Image (tube, rainbow, N blue to C red; front, side):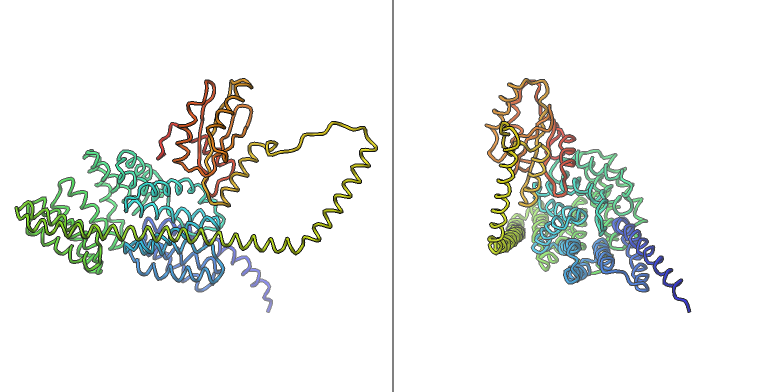
Length: 577
């Protein structure tokens, strides 16, 4: 029997199957954030297909990563944690280090589902570090979005805005990543930024980011409902009740598309919280009871606790103190058992207010003291998580420094071993060069000596490239400022350069990009530092000279992309732009 046709068929079939598998996983990657139940069904089918035609290690790892994030979207946090731990260990064992930041982000997200920030935050720092090291913008965006979201929840707005801005900047590099893994759709990032701006008090811009997310083609299903609910809440706070009601109506219309019971219950509870603010108490209570039945059935005590608190709020709005207190007592019991001190503080404060309204100030005072104790414990827990995060960052920095020292020591040993050969070669080259120079000089008339080449002979682009390489290797910030110097004489330019150099640090530099453009290089300068430098230099600029843009270096920037962002980002934009 001739096996050659069969072999040829297999050779043609395998690449086609692999390409089809990659395309399917790309579709699932978006689907898991839109319709997680459907994504889970497609993953099961894909696993069955690959069981008949085993895929390579990288494809299997990607399949596991997609399944991990699908479990998160379905609310299966413990299952996601177990899979993420296995995936991280397996990726390390197989030598696929570039896959580890995806599993670490999934693991961190799983821990955050239980409010375990002490484990979640250091894992995210590690994932971000690995993503940068292995040039994985998809992993970088995933981890930065989650860390920004957690920092927003803990009112650490300064850190959150930096992470989310960097994630949005890096998102342009996501499609061009050579090997696809998993990443959130852009509307999810816009929703996170909108939520941050809403939480920090910038309601109008928060609503704008959510509206921008709604215009994206991938804003379907669960993603669209999240954006609509966030927009409805922002509009309500802005007292635009008609817009809020309209957006909430659109969110309700998407409820039939939510197939997961947990997701549906979460949507009921979230929509009900807004309906309470709009005054539709009866409908809100009906939706809260539906959500509570699901959470109780699935033993989801944390979400059930939040529903009990919303029911208590609705009873208080109706003046039903007895029913409200019963709900709050349930909340207090759950939060004490789960050591959820922040939630306990809120419940005790609400319960104390009911007694104060009834004139029982003794009970109100005792409950307020318990609330203060719970608040102190919540702050201690948050601070402990942040300290662990800082320790993890210091450990990563120390490890990087140690590796650099080992590499340097190894190189020094090689240099010492070969110094004799290098010296002999150098002496030989010098003798040859001297002899050649004497020969050439004897055969030609002597000419004037040329000027020595210095760093100034480098072009502006070369200086920028060197500065970017040093910043990336040293893992420190670098900012640039574009200046237009058209219409100035040579003497005016010399005076301007002198004044600017006196105001800058020794580490800063001014290079020419052309006849009418200067570039100010500012190493060790973040976005906030850049704003101070711009304010310091503005009075020094004379007529005909103006600052036309600025930017800060991101890990995946090239000279062209950095200058492009600098020219596009004018100084009229705010620091949150």
